[in-house]
Length: 62
Image (cartoon, rainbow, N blue to C red; front, side, top):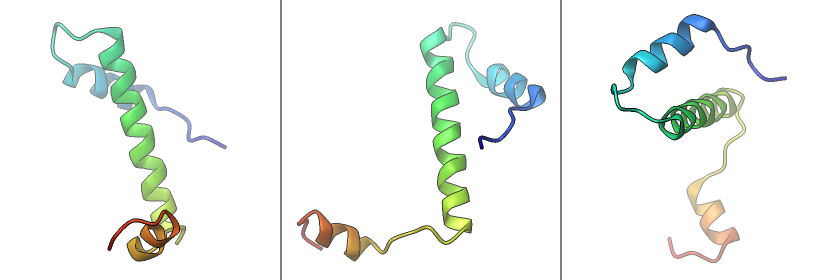
């Protein structure tokens, strides 16, 4: 279940945008914030992988 968006947080996000911001700018900020929050939640819950493990999975050099 997704976290409930709080109006105050949404207002702060909008207030940080420049005066000439577009809808696309706003959508990007929402997407970025959501991705960061999900990543932090995964980290706190221990749902992480070691960099070496991920690189090995995709055949990338260490």
